[in-house]
Amino acid sequence: MSSSATHRGAAVVEVTDLHKSFGSNHVLRGLDATIRQGEVVCVIGPSGSGKSTFLRCINLLEQPTSGSIKVGGEEVTDPDCDIDAIRRNMGMVFQQFNLFPHLSVLDNCTVAQTTVLKRGKEEAETKARDNLEKVGLSDKADAYPAQLSGGQQQRVAIARALSMDPKLMLFDEPTSALDPELVGDVLSVMRRLATEGMTMFVVTHEMAFAREVADRVIFMDGGSIVEEGVPSQVIGSPTEERTRVFLQRVLDPTHVDPGAEDEAHAERHRAAAAAAGSTPGVPLDPQR
Amino acid sequence: MSTAITDAPAKKKLSPRRRAQRIRWTQYALLVAFVIAFALGADWGQIQSVFFRSDLVKATLTEGLPNAFKNTLVYTAGAFVLGLLLGTVLALMRLSSVGPYRWISTAWIEFFRGLPAIVVFIAFSLLPLAFEGLVIPYDPYGTVWVALGLVASAYMAETIRAGIQAVPPGQIEAARSLGMPAGVATRKIILPQAFRIITPPLTNEVILLVKDSSLVYVLGLSAAGYELTKYGRDLASSNANLTPLVVAGFCYLVITLPLSYVVRRMEARQKKER
Image (cartoon, rainbow over all chains, first blue to last red; front, side):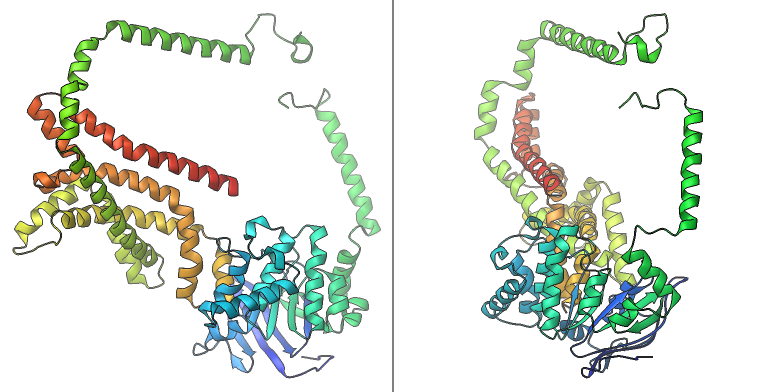
């Protein structure tokens, strides 16, 4: 199934027939995917399509119901696998940032280095400052997360993940919780990471970013991969109807197809008429 | 003036705000009347000689009060430390994935929360009789610490558990995603945040402990081990006057009022941060 357009390098992640259920809710219905060294893969799709669950299965934040996930050749679903060691090599960026609020920005970036990688304090701080510089926040090293804007917090989260020298970065809708004017800074950091050759797996709603940066786009719907390929194909000229419908909604949200518009218009009129008929006086609430 | 909108009934009715104002004035008037009646009716001389006899105040303050005050503090501090350590272990057990740990800690918490503290203390006073040769070290402090600490641990465990659960799940996910093993994530990420959240309720526990330490007299302590209540009560009964007890009571307020002030400050600050 992995009809990857760009075979840059060895497979970093190999997913075969991945299933995930929450109770009776079958969220992932047999996914197959490969992420190769140096590749940027973007996953797009409507909300509830299982994109985030898919990503969270890769570092085992969600336990798959069945199927195989190999990271660097190691089967992460195997109980004998050292998941902490695998996670060390895999940076994760969350939608809600999840910075540690009791630690300064610098300590956020060093705490895992010193406790997990056993790096010395000095080495860890140098590494942290380098990465903060990279995301453009070297002046915020001593600030606390609560003092930063959402966009700054998310960039710190990226620096925190990078400080572990990961081989792969997972992004779970990194800009979805941000105010629109803050999205750009985070995306440009990610864009730069991509050009530096970082292997990235990005769940996103930013079509422009996917089109520009991704080597490959995966479109998911209803827990399955519907379409997969280079961005110009999947986003530019999708072959599947479901992909087309989704992209039309996302890329042109003000567009409503004519039939639906007439219906909505009529509905509004009926509602207005009903409201006018029932309360002929002043509809103002005197309490206000 | 107000008739245009509400097409008012013919009978003149007080507006809600006018009515509320009238009720408020009635309450003030009642209060003033009550205070005047009390000031005129009370036998001030008698009140003073029963509750605030100056020579007894002096005697209470000088005799054994510093020692009793110190004992109350030491009992409370020791019990707090023990309760905190034990409570943390119990809270972690309560949240453990190992069933029996959960059961044990639940049983412990329910048992010691359900019993009156004084029953636990009476049981401890009888322990040396029941188990011959049983010696709890650092007498009398050891016994008090253990007895009071056991009771405190049950309450604190519940507070700490609530604090741990109040840390957003994203925190543990972020920590584990960085490759931290569960233990490291708990120590470095979860517990520091949990304790920040529970500092105010935990300080309230200290206030409760200060007061509960007044019950340890049932352990049958020697005079050197008296705390404020026992000390004040003995003096009060030997003098047939309440003044020593009043002085002891004030000493409790000296400890607890600053603590509750601190709690209020911390709560206000947490509210602002959120």
